Length: 512
Image (cartoon, rainbow, N blue to C red; front, side, top):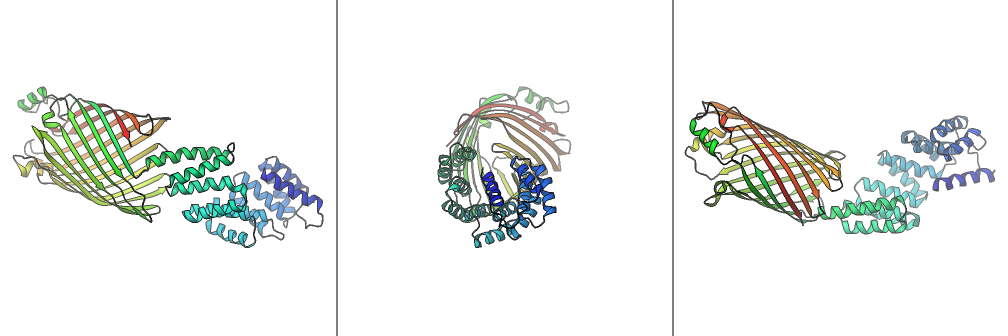
């Protein structure tokens, strides 16, 4: 509508004020181009207005409308050239300055856009619209405070920018994670014109704000309760021809199948800090109880982690530290193992919706159980390790992750000294509004350093594949139902480490 009003005003001056300098009004191609533009026949308008420009190269209006036609057809680079001509010709078309700024902004040419903003401010050209565009540029440069101030000025200069400015101010507050203030601005944008397209967007952003406000709350508590059926909780093979009779007797009579429960509690603390500083910490605990073999396989684990860091725009650096302590039942619960990891983690945005992570650190693992031959069987290790991980966020609720890890386990017992590679893939795909599909796949290659004297002096070589498929049904923001099937296949050149395993689980997760 604004475009039609502007065209009408231009035609009024062309027709009724003959003393004005020529803007190409005597050129029939110019008049035909205006007609085609008003009919939204932009490709045809480009052809006709190009002829008008050739016939009258000094016509700023012909240049301006040709630029508009290119812009409406999606060709901003060609539009830019004609807007520039219309802005520098004598007499210039003031609206061309605004269109030129917007074209530079959309093409990411912020320096050039700012130069023309300075010109527009100096000559007082459409101050409200120029202020709004300046706010958009400051927003893209992550100068959120400056953008908010400029948007406020645009709507103070012209009330017609109230809705657009409040919407953009709401987006700015979202970036600052000030969700309640952002919600208020989106509500204001809806109230000003409830039937507009912008009001529809504002309503959607209100929903996003509420969701983010919940997901990004500083203190988060998650409780999970699962029941499962495990076909091979002992992770042992079946009878093997080359195995001694006592081994085959054991695997034939062992109670491998069992029902069980897995209960988890996790507390996360992710405060919003001023400046570039970031921090998160968490405590988690889980318990696993089996119907069978519970006196030797039930476990309780407690884990603590902290990750202070600095955020430098597209790159964040954290120092990651984690400690996990495990108790296992042996008539009563006794300490079984402890694991600690420390190292730097670098996270960067490789492109829009694509995140890369790099980690290089050190992991130590101590086993407290007593073994008869510690120089051979002690599994305690010290391990330098590294990984690279790629995240693709393709939907507000859709994520794909690919990760490669390299680990060197220097074990106290030489039977467990090994090097390994791990490749994993994870997908969360929304298949309905509150229903997500979860797929995981993991492949481990582990080559052991020394010959194993208990198994024909072979060097152990393991290939372990695991994969799962699950469904997550969100009941509301705080509760979800999870159903999952997990399959594991361990392929080793030593029979005692070959096994397959199936686990089916159903559970509930609560978030507070």
